[in-house]
Image (cartoon, rainbow over all chains, first blue to last red; front, top):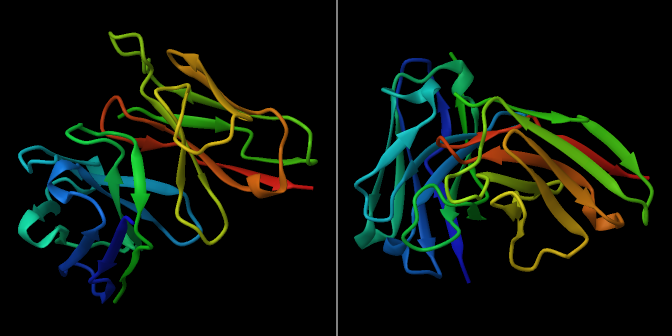
Length: 122
Length: 111
C-alpha cells in the first residue's frame, strides 16, 4: 500500500528557511518521479516542483525558482523541499505526490500525501 | 507560463442528471504524438485530490465510466453522464505540457 508522509512544516518568519521531508513506502521509490503541490488556505491547488526518478532533472513553478530546491535520497525513500527566502504567499499545505508510472517525466499525479502546513508570518 | 481557465466555477446538479465542465488553455496542449497533455482531478471534501483523466481522455484506473474527457488543442471538457452523490467536490483541469498548471477549480454541488 502506497504511503507518503510529509513532515517539517511549521510557523516561520518571512525571509527564513524551512525544509520539508516526505517519506515514501509501498512502492519502489527510485523508479518514480516525485512532485510537491501546495494549497493555500481556502484556495486552489498549485504545482510547485518535480524531480525525476533518477534525480537528474528538476523543475519549478516560476514563483519559487531560485528560492526552493527539490531533492531526493533514494537510500531513505525520501523527497525533500528546501524552502529559502520564504514569503507570506508561500503559506500553504504542501503535499508530496508520486508519478503515475515508472521512469516518466512530469507524469500524471497519482498518490498524494496528506500534507504539511507551512505558515510564513512575522 | 500556460494559463488554465475553467467554467463554470460552480454548479449544482441533481443525482442522475449529467454535468459538464469546460477547461481552456492559453496555448495548445497537443503533443506531436497526437495526445493532449491535459489531466482532470477531483478533490473531495477533506481528501487529497484523485486523478480522473489523463492525456485528455484516458480514464485512470478505477474511475467509473460515467466520467469522460474530450477536446483537443486548447478546449477541453469533462463530462459526467449521470451524477452520483459521491461525485461532489472540486474538479481541476491541469496542463502538463510545460511543468504543470492547475485551473481555478470547479465546485460541483450535489442537490
